[in-house]
Structure formats: structure tokens, C-alpha cells
Length: 190
Image 1: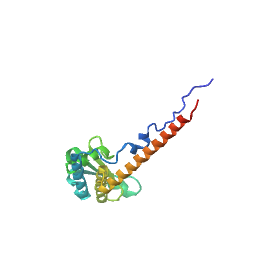
Image 2 (image 1 turned 180 degrees about the vertical axis):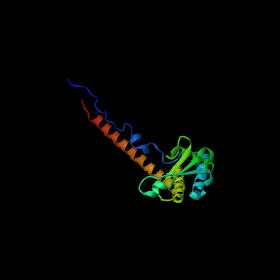
Image 3 (image 1 turned 90 degrees about the vertical axis):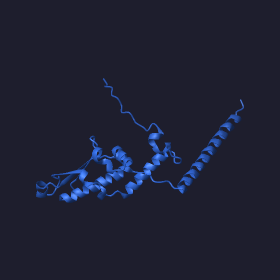
Image 4 (image 1 turned 60 degrees about the vertical axis):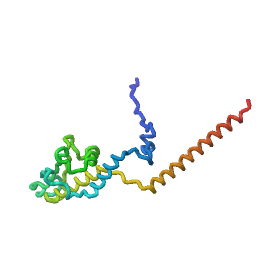
């Protein structure tokens, strides 16, 4: 007697959009409105001037606890691990609104209570760990923003030239395929 068991289903990439996500995107003529461009421009300026020193320390709650890992009595006796909390709902106003939205969408540091929580226990004293927390907060905000760069005229012309060349190649291939098919039709004499 054989027991029937279900064989594992072989999963494949069913659609090219999953396998090649860049295929569906247009390179020229993006659908970004002028208002969005203005927001992105302001966000780009804000991000260029944003440094770890610009983060208002009074709105960040820093707590200390015992660190883990090696370190002997220093780790066991001294609270050196720093935990930084920034409530985005109450104190996130110093961040550009466009970037704040991106931080909420993309950052792995944001909790369900709309807080950014960052911990650091790499150093053996509180001051260095606190400073490292602010550096990491700065990096988290900057990385979550990921603003797309400005496209130059030269790049746009280059992309248009490449798209035109690809279109011509595609049409040439279609003509060749069509002529091959029509040659087959004419060759039959039944």
C-alpha cells in the first residue's frame, strides 16, 4: 500500500515583471508632476544640509542599559548601551515632510507606535554610544529618503537615442519574421 503524498510544487517566475522588474518602467517622460518635483527639490536641499548635529537632542529620549557581549566587569556593572527614541508624530517636524513620509514607509527602525528606535553598544562608554546613536539616526533618515537624481539633458537625449535604436531593431526583426512567413506561404504548391 502506497501513501499518497503531494509533491513539492516547482515555483517559477511566472511573469517577466517579477523576473525583470525594470522592463515595465519608462526611462523618459516620467509622470512626476511639477508639485512633486518642487517637493523633491526642497527635500534634496534639506538633505544636503542635514547633519547629525542638526538633530534636536531635546526631542530625542536616550536611555541607558547594560550592554551584551564580552567586556568583563565593565559590561556587568556599567550601563553603557544607549537606546535612542524619536517620536515622529510629536517631534518629527524638523524632518522635511517628503522625507518624513519616505522614512515612515521605508525605514526598518520605525515601530508601530511611529517612533524611530536605535540602539548602540559598540563602545565602552555612554557618550560614544549616544553619539553613535545620533550618527545612525542620521544615516537611517538619509538612507530611507533615497531621492532620485536629477536627469540631465544629455542623459535624456542618450536614452531617447537608445530607445529609437531599439524600436528600429524591433521593427526590422518583425519585417524579417513577416517575410520569412510570407515566403513559406508562397512555397506551397498543393
